[in-house]
Length: 279
Image 1: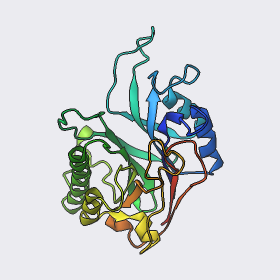
Image 2 (image 1 turned 180 degrees about the vertical axis):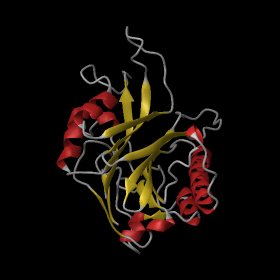
Image 3 (image 1 turned 90 degrees about the horizontal axis):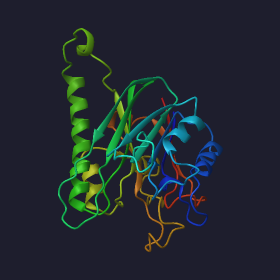
């Protein structure tokens, strides 16, 4: 299985302006993927979309027509155009090539943070068919401006994992219609822009919660490679550093994985990261 995760910054490159189609072209050049998980995708927001490319979700869905698109925005504001259907949204997009068994949009916590910038955030969970059985792939983008908000968000994601394990250990009853058993994931991959580096307390919380950092799993005792700030020193004066991850549930600890970062493109302030896992 091959998965890409990338904060595409709504197609805004470091040096050449905004071109979301150019970003999609680049993704295609990286080869075939079973899942594509994008963060910072915009719809009908003049701050982020060009007049020629007003709906990035629709563009991506047409570009990857053999994938099923799952869209998750933390908000949906009224249209700023003459068309009331052009609602303003900003969030994550997951494109799934494998059989999609189920999906959910999880709203992440947003506690009051007086005077700080905040935006409503979500996690898209896709449950796909795999050789392991149902596999959960969660695509998310955590808070940047408020540490407490980010902490509540990682706790929320861990609570989802605790719930998954509880359902495996204590299966619910089988009923008709919407009370059917459904698809409880046998394992989970959590990916995206987490907005914390490996030295931070949020990273340590993840490790203590028994999430497996795929960087450390594939490259033990090595420093995680830079996934952000390589080219954009205006936003990231500290330079290149890691804040994008694939986290694995414990069931995946015995499988052979490879994780890489493409550090050559300046199409975003973040870099594409790619997970390959054999099972």
